[in-house]
Image (cartoon, rainbow, N blue to C red; front, side):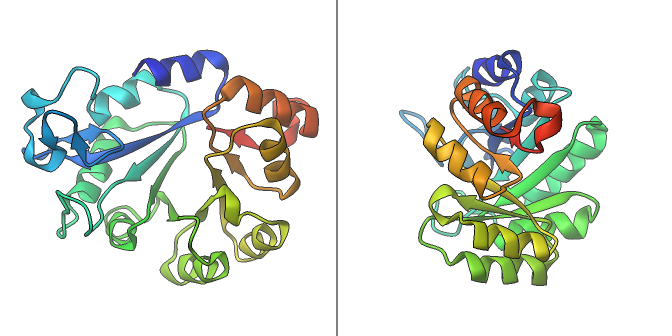
Length: 222
């Protein structure tokens, strides 16, 4: 939570966070499938979560007004896999209750989660995540065929050719996780739409140097 709040103070356009389903059906914000010393999140009740693991509702409240990229963590290879995609439906229900005005993007490596979001809430933007071993051209085709709105690429997959193909197909492109002025400048040169970074100040400074002021540049830093 402190990182989200600090990102907002530093001028980030938004935040990216990961959501997992707890054993009692809550939405915990945590990257890894397990919490050291506690066990898999999918086997834990909310009362068993450590204080530094917030629920999604609290995280959304903390970053009200910012773009939020919610990554649904739900892979068959990890503990706590949810084949019924309850996590996707619960995220949609929460967003409906929140009635947020700021943009929300739902991303995932698992197409099943994105498909469940699209069924429950076709108006929500969905982004297919691709790891560094994936073929971005195939990813463009997959995203278009499935009706997703964005492609979220590991930074090593980004090139002007790939970004142009995605844009021509009507997809927005986000690059993750981009740190260092040279890497950020390369993403800007490739015309990605969103840069996901650990370094808000450094990334913003590089983008401003490349694009000019934030309201004129067109890139967003999360």
